[in-house]
Length: 166
Image (cartoon, rainbow, N blue to C red; front, side, top):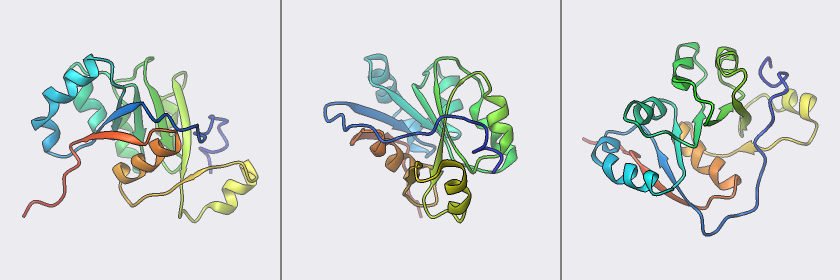
């Protein structure tokens, strides 16, 4: 409730950019194995999107993302937005802890909302019918894929999207 009343601009749907390819770096173990390929593509101009902890992983290795997406609501995870950058667009879920938005004051921040959330009455109260819930599963990666598609990016190269390894 506190976050959606901040006046942070919402993520809104954009026209499809069929010829644009985006790199999406997520937190699986294979991100380390494929990092050289990701780094080369980023250095050659491919936009890089990170999620939660992959943001710091990439920045610590000198790879600065274009966009950082966050979903996690626990206060402890406000660390995911560090180090702060004036060159990054931060796409932060409305369910994130308010301390995330406090840390990002003065940065390029946009708010987005999870579809399936029980707070639709609250969203309607603040936005009327002008909000855009993002489909997906329970992870930041599955939501990020839908969020990026809503923003007009149907072509993603995903790094570190690992499954169970038994």
